[in-house]
Length: 312
Image 1: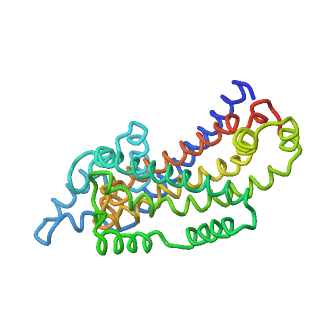
Image 2: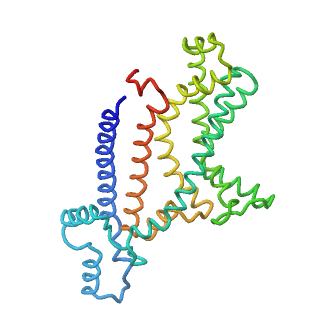
Image 3: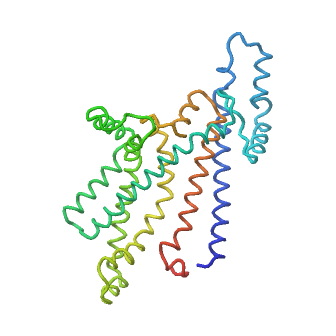
């Protein structure tokens, strides 16, 4: 796969990503305008009709919804999503102040899931039908079946309340991120383990692995340099979807652990009807998911040399 092919894929994915972000933000805008009118809770019974109309004008809520939508798109292209109804700060500033915490938690959960899932998948594949394999598969099923909010509450109960080893919530030192990371990354680790296991089982029975062994290569070299690179393609394919899950899952996990990220901010904005901040948060999240999927697509030639060479 040459540089021109990679660039064409990148341009194609970027155009698709822009379309996805446009549709998502447009839907959120329309839903927010059809939901509760923020003027109702930003004013009191003593507020006059003239003051309410002035407030609607200031918030950009006056006029037909079509005109509001056009004005919104023009401002959104300039990354101006308005000001928060509550704090009066720019909506993107409100979101960006929380983005680092969500990124920190999401990255930690992704690293944890891959560090746990891929080695377990390799071990389970190499020791197929052994007690280790059965235990790994059982853990994968439990990881996929356990709701993250319930798991988070149980971890808090045992490790924070009963044992006192970890804080119950908030952010600060390394201890604060351990339980949210496990809660958020367990499902992704289970998916990674199952895909790695099935991929390794398929690859280990192929001709090129038998050829590598016939050349006298060490078993560790056969596994890590040849088999694993081919077995990781399904993991890379699903990784883009799992990144989306991790970002979306932070909404619940951040609330359970009082983690000051975008997810917790979104729940708050929905409660109080702070629609500019909500739209800005969804814009950042959807853009992050699109970017993660583009990176996954570009990683294929690195993982599998056959794709780089133009093979199938």
